[in-house]
Amino acid sequence: MNNAGLPGKPAKVSEPQEDDIPEAVRDTPDVKPQFRLKPIWLIVGALGLGAIALLLGLFFLMSKPKPTASLKPTQPTPNPLATDNVLGHLPYKEAPVSELQPITADRQIKLRTAAAQKFKEMSAAAGRQGVILVPISGFRSVADQQHLFFDVKTQRGQVASKRAEVSAPPGYSEHHTGYAMDIGDGKVPATNLSADFENTAAFKWLEKNAVFYSFEISFPKGNPQGVNYEPWHWRFVGDRDSLETFYKAKQLTSPGSTPSTTPSPTSASTPSTEASPTPTSTPSTEASPTPTSTPSAEASPTP
Image (cartoon, rainbow, N blue to C red; front, side):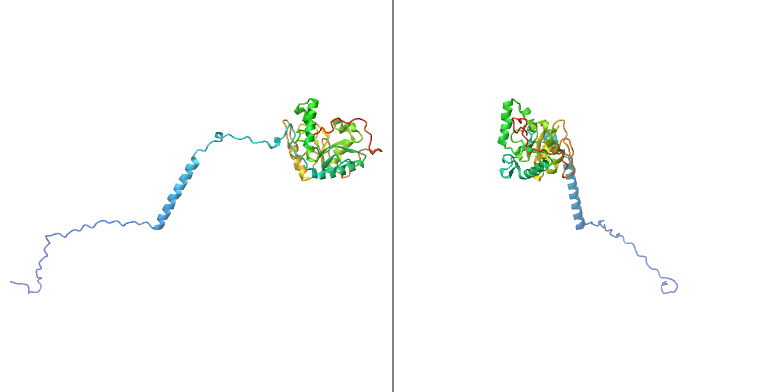
């Protein structure tokens, strides 16, 4: 009996039949996302690698052993204080004749213009105090010095080093410059070119007053050049050229001696602070005293 039309009884629904063929399983490949570098990072990376390479190069250059100084011969450093001196004397240029002025009436003794003017002023000041400063020698040419050094050395049988103690070789004399001169005492000519000149009124006046006229003694006692003490030999240092000319001489050193940092213009005294010093001797009544003895046969033996 068919009950399908009867209420209350559900109709039988046929159950779906399972498919005998299983659902196809699809293999989906496991694809990882690709990472792409941006251009800016590529640039930064390239710069970083370049910097590292540069640092490595510098490191290898700095670590490379350097050649030692002993591989090359070293040249000795010259001593500027001992340059160009011969037997303690320094080279001096000969003064141009056009720059020389006479300081004596016979016009035979000359000095450079500035030195000549100052000597005349100094001589006049000394004369007002009764002191007579006599010029014995001034400018001397290289030819004149040739005779004084070599000819006299031969006549006296002196070796060069001994001769150099009292006279410079030609080309190495202060007299070439036109700034140096030998001074005597007009009242005591016997002391000319002698160490006894230091006992005269002329020398004592020069010690106190020569600095006011820019003159200084060239070879005081114990001078570093090793030249004999010459109280009669004075040089002018009153302008730039004369000061530069004698600068080396002041700085020249010899074994066992130390150059003074403040060279004194005289050998044993301090110059007066007064521009017009008090007379140191009584004026003589004789303007030109007669010599009492014969001066040295060698007229100009000084450097």
